Length: 308
Image 1: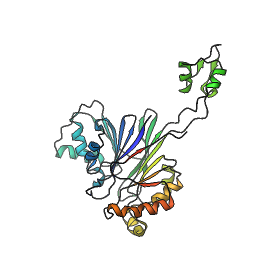
Image 2: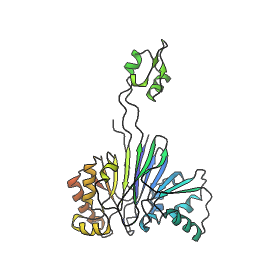
Image 3: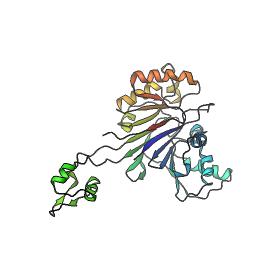
Image 4: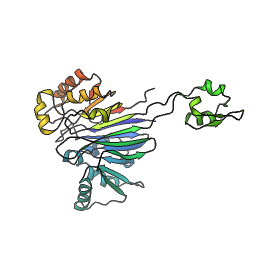
């Protein structure tokens, strides 16, 4: 089952000619989840030829303009295609007011159901088949949340030799055992999945964190992520400014990634003070702490693979 993250925009505060505002799209076997929707989101969707009408959920970190100004255009765009399923929008308090005001003031034509869910406390905010999306509190200048999409554990590795020894005929019964269903052997005995499977294997985990001070408990929320997309807005020299504005440096993001044993860190939400050639300083400082750090760029794609 494919899982991949598309960086639609990597900038913070204001868009630049080659840097749209922060937005990340996660595609899981054709189903799409959008994390934040800054200005320019539609442009990257079109350039990547992504099927925006398959976006199931839009998850918003907070209601600062550089994270939500792409939403109205997406809502209007979705009315131009046939859409049967509702669109879920999940975010902090006042996200419903923002959506409703935008619809009213812009006199939007909407021909599908929009379900807005305001977060009242950390926890699971969306449940799908074989996965869930969880939110957790961040520390910014207004209510702000990070998100993880976590897959359920997968059945362990199937051992054909054990199935054959238990007289389970090759074919559909093997498939049932692999999916966790007990079956009946040729001699009539019951065979349980744990008799032919190894220990359960972990699913994949994606984490999205932006606009926050660095704090210790973040480690537990993003622990073990296969891909950790995290703001690295400033270099170490501007740590004071980061603290004042309640943001993170690239080095702080890397330290969280290291302590949380994530597999890959993709920095995002750069200050507009950094031109493209200046971003290498952010990467240099992050890589010194966590070698598997990369600079995300608009329209970059990150496949997220199973391990084991």
